[in-house]
Length: 370
Ligand code: UD1
Image (cartoon, rainbow, N blue to C red; front, side, top):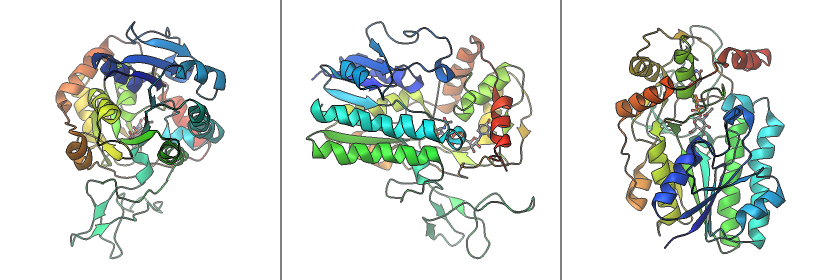
């Protein structure tokens, strides 16, 4: 059955892929997007969006814009959000306003204009530190990062005997541990969706995304994901700047696989009420991705290792994607090397302003890099 799907934040990196995937499934797609400059620069509103997508320009906090955007919609994908973990620690009012108040306004409108299903983009950030095991194989769920007191302190969290803990894939049952304003705001979005949908006869689904990457990332936004930042640095002949020691682990998931997860969450009969991790199922260190990317871009350049932490960052969090595979039939399709090669090819054709040093200064001036 085809639907009319409203995608808030749908002109953004992930939204454009979700829009495309929904069109390919035969749905009608409408996008509500404020096209903020930090993300979109001076881009034309329809750039990167299929001409079949209807675009409503407006802020998710603007009731009138939302009402227009919701007209005739049967399902909603809620992606509109501020996305920088580091920036969220100083632009607190903006992050809480867009992410949480924005979601509240959306639901206020949905109460009077209900849809069948709402899929919200939550984030792996809500876990805080991921799941760990110790040298004896015991699982640790409550690991909290403590600030290093000296240069000789290890980067990895330790168990009570002082042994480094080993990251293991984090499943959905791990309790949230909200380590940044961004994480807190994403958790609020997720809970608003899963609390309000059933109360008003709607189906709610939350996807906890890991680190999405691919062509179309916002290259000139210094608060975007690490791969886009590294790509922009390398493209401008600058070495990637790596926080900590570079051995922190994440799961980089190709944006087409993220779009696949959204389509499953929108269509699958098992999805309602569910919370699903979305990753590739393979984890990598930040240093490793810096190196693979510089090879893919043919810009061999040793990264600069900052040896400092960005306040609010977690050390390791890697994805257990068993639930979405089993319940919704998700498959991680894109090979990482192939994904990087495509990203490199796309970046080579872009102009990207490198604003990373300015962003780092903003964080340092506020004591948010230590
Ligand atoms: C990212 C997203 C977040 C999303 C989450 C899960 C951003 C800004 N954050 O969080 O929205 O919810 O994935 O998908 O897109 N790093 C460097 N050098 C840099 C930038 C970052 O070494 O120039 C490091 C960070 O310190 C961190 C790692 O790279 O250790 C990942 O950082 P980042 O890409 O910001 O992602 P997350 O915090 O994992």
